Length: 322
Image (cartoon, rainbow, N blue to C red; front, top):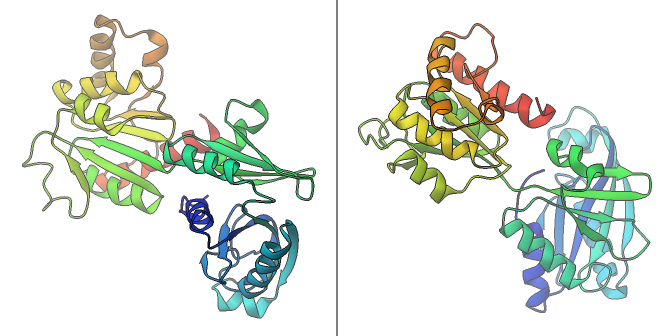
């Protein structure tokens, strides 16, 4: 799902005495304008932020949200989006959406929303689990086995009578080595929804001129990774071929719960890398986490093609757990 600040806005409006109701897409059929989990917040004055339909049914949702703020009860709304309405927001055909509206402070307890916001701020994966019409929901983590697949796929949805809203922290990617492959890779990572960081202590390589608009660290790789923080929503890619730069980053990454570690280099280069890591006490299970040679085997030759293969492999690991 999109990591925006809708829950945070709802809590801030509620604290400010402006009232707030959260509207969440809980189910879709056909070509729905927004995916399940998309949210809109409505204040007591009719102010809105976010979207549940791209504009097709926002007016009706706002009206229902204002009513919900008056009576303090949640409600589930069902809307059919016509082909003409869908075309207006860039879709080929219409669909149907169900929207859960919850006034903050009653149907959605303030303390529960505050805990959700705190988890998001701490980059903790969290799910909001609720049975619409059956009282307040609860928060759950990825340690619940029944939710693991949803967290991995970023997929909110309905199971039986229960709606599960997945709130994963934003995806991040750390690229070690300001080489040619890094240039298209950073662009592709951003397009795919990642917040990328480029790490290279060689300032002539990792320059703003070569990587305009990118976030660049000139710290030593292990220091940069420690300062940046590595978690289960982070991918690390090393590209320098230089053990002095790659190896410290690899060791730091292997000590963290990142979901992907890929290292550029031939099979022969990787064999030498493995020997160095083994000599430093890195276990076979840890080494097995490394994807090397990096990227899917698609016959990539140019820097851009290699970047495509890397992004494809990262996506495969993220979505399929391979």
